[in-house]
Image 1 (tube, rainbow, N blue to C red):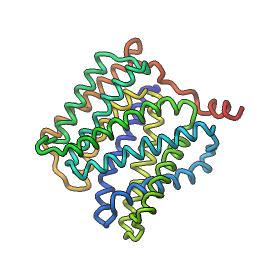
Image 2 (image 1 turned 90 degrees about the vertical axis):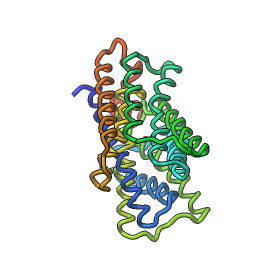
Image 3 (image 1 turned 30 degrees about the vertical axis):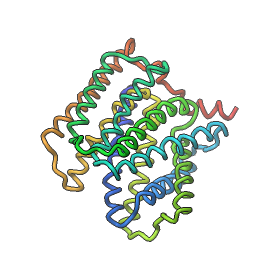
Length: 312
């Protein structure tokens, strides 16, 4: 398997991990957990598990202070704030519209990447974007009646923040192990949410066993696996490609909802899923044509070589 295909597979696994998030959140909400508790314990449990995993895997968390600072900002300003904005938008918008607004980010990432010169753009990539966005409309069944302006602002803000987060990640991760990066990102987000929920007395710890199991599922599958695989795939295929492939998330989420929550699939959702799969296929064909579609900076140095350089 070449690096392009491996990177695509890793991002697809990441999308599947993120797709479990609404399933586990619904289970946690059913046990009485509030939004801030879910976010706080999501990142706190994930951070604790990641720190535990590093030593048995023989991975040193020692990196430059400057890099730690960058990763911390990514966790607080980037991933943490995006999660909060998206969760807040759900108070004013339907879940489908909130998801649609968030998944504008592949378009934003591709445009931003082209503007700053980080990646090349092509008509194939543009076609893939148009097809995947069209598929998202069909899958999510968006209704634009009686839309809350505040909800739209929150939803669009989450997409903008996430787009910037992905672009910055693509640069920062060129000299740090993906597991170490995930650890620091989750730790920073955990610290901020923990301090805020404790200060405002909104942290709920008296949850039943099913509630804690749901939170562990969120921490492991929807956070550690999802973020780690995304970071690993990002360095192999570039930010724009990773963002487009990540739009498989709502397709997988719909399938998980039907499987675990008994939600019914519609014909339009099925068509939308086929469109997104088609857009990913177009993207993979595009990446094979290196003269026009390969990202300019899509190769990471071997992580062992990176460690040797850091040790120097």
